[in-house]
Image 1 (cartoon, rainbow, N blue to C red):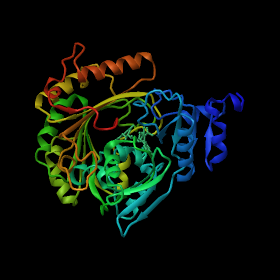
Image 2 (cartoon, rainbow, N blue to C red):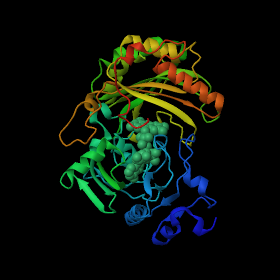
Image 3 (cartoon, protein in one colour):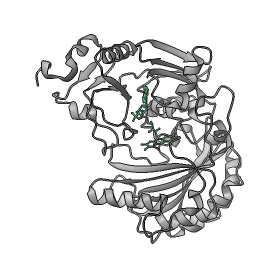
Image 4 (cartoon, rainbow, N blue to C red):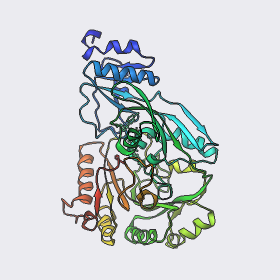
Length: 428
Ligand SMILES: Cc1cc2nc3c(=O)[nH]c(=O)nc-3n(C[C@H](O)[C@H](O)[C@H](O)COP(=O)(O)OP(=O)(O)OC[C@H]3O[C@@H](n4cnc5c(N)ncnc54)[C@H](O)[C@@H]3O)c2cc1C
């Protein structure tokens, strides 16, 4: 394709940037447009890789002048909600990769393309932690604009409310720095309102003095799903806000990347993250340990160790998932989860988890953003792979069984009544 054939005359954009623009006729086109979720086939007009905030301004102004739209993206972890990219410049933030940590001020500043994997280890070395989530592989900007639910959540709240300043380019091409004192309404809207108010170029956020915590997972045989999840449900009523935990059914695939004791096996798991001393952690977990886990990885660890504890897959995959925010978790809902995803269910889902939220996550606060709090006590997330048509159909069927009972497995009557929000979080 020659330059003149490119849609919207996009070639002229290339000349104005320090960074680069990739067009459909470029050999790296497929790599440039790939999203982490391989089910999403992104076909924008061009993919731009700005090198700095000035480049972002150029791209936004160029798009406005040429009737194009701009979609900011880093990993494409959350690419599925984006509709058609026709007439869109996909703006990839990969090169906005600055990281600065001011340990004394308990602050970090990052470019919009920085993923948690670049900040969590550095902060941990300094005896500090940020309110990251389960995977090191998402951008801090994408995670933070959507809310940000992580393992310190019940004590310290949503990540978005620990953001202290945001720099962005708005639709008029202006670069703005917003915080509690400058354009406070825009600062409010960005924190939980998602990426619709401009292209974020950098953000600053609080760090917490956490040198170590008592954290890990208790693995039990899948056959004990009902017993363990009921015990977990009873246990969470006894824990303070210092403890955030997850009850989960996980079916490990039979692949080499999974270590031997787990490879190809289904488990019921409790992930637990307890802030405070080892003695406090041991005491808090005693009731769960008394159940006799087959594998017990809970111990004192530095914050960096939390990065991999949820065992999220590092490489792009085709998958589909569903999430809900739940008001309560009646015992009947545990029975329903086990019936739909536990032993004998025939479920093919890789992971079905219930995160215990509440605590600081459920409390509003002065100075918070648009997502002031999570209006629920639990977050459900189910996910499965969709590598081929048969797997796609099975995954969708099994997710459906959990959510609506459209099939012969009973629906989650117990929790369906308690659902308080389906669209509050980004896709987990
Ligand atoms: C394996 C996995 C584990 C996860 N675990 C958690 C978790 O524990 N807790 C949690 O809260 N979430 C979790 N998430 C959800 C994740 O935080 C969101 O999908 C998040 O949006 C990913 O951000 P990203 O920038 O990497 O993704 P992208 O798909 O690149 O971006 C997502 C959206 O963020 C916005 N955005 C990104 N960058 C910018 C920018 N510079 N300016 C303006 N808007 C921007 C855009 O609207 C974009 O469409 C998980 C997701 C996955 C796939």
